[in-house]
Image: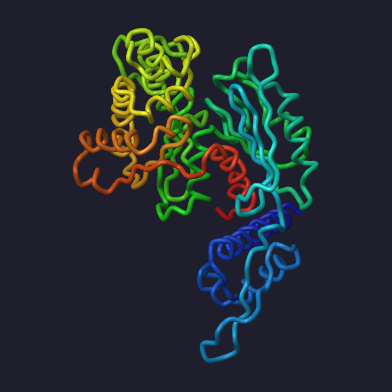
Length: 400
């Protein structure tokens, strides 16, 4: 009896493996025939055809018609039905929660967002589930599952939040709560790792390995190596470059240490230095954009910088040098060919990006540095929730 059960489990596992192989081949190909699929996957033509038949029956794949003949019977071409399934991606940040309903190509079909409503300025569970409820109600196709991304140390296997900048969420099993409520597959990940998965999946890069440096209130780096998100050995902590010391004897960081990269190269750090500039530079353009130093925000900093404020150019240059040093360390260890800047700080544009790249190149071996591209993400503010959605395409469908 045990032997029969083990054999069935093995057969089921093999069947699922074949299904994922075939679906991934069709998803990543332009249009393929059954013979193409057999060749790409290494499966026999009989097995490939059987799996294709199941995928067509499930509505995931459709026949497009006949392709050009290579001398015999014209092949029937196949394509994934992008609208066949839908996924939910949630971006849980300090001040805002946003989410989207996506098709299988990462196109947003419906979106919702809400500011934090709890007393300490963070989202609460009821707010997150209310937002998900709206997205579930908007779905008109079967849901693959729900992906959620948050800042901090997130265990991707259990869905437990071990440490985060969101107060009151430490050692909280958000994944467990959502599984119990929705009865759907739930996958969670650090926000920068979600951003890296979004870049890899939806941005059309040729690189199979890349790093995304997420520049928001904090600094973190999501890593994709050979097509797989790298989480690290524990707590999904491979992204936490913002809490590596960058300045000896520096300022106190939110993590309790001093001089972390986050204290000198984040949005908060830039705004703090801009406020000092406001107080000390009577010629700063910031004085025309804010009534006092206390209300100088990133929007004012961005506007003044783009208008050519000399003081801000120096401040932004200093931030870029700190980030360039951090990026150089990433590239030296991982040897990734592509570094993507994402988050609000990346809106500083080409001068900022070029300064980071220049600092990186000064700190690396020339043969390594000249092969690395540093660029700004084109996915905008959707990058994290898109990456959360891509988790389902990877974990549940195997197409990424």
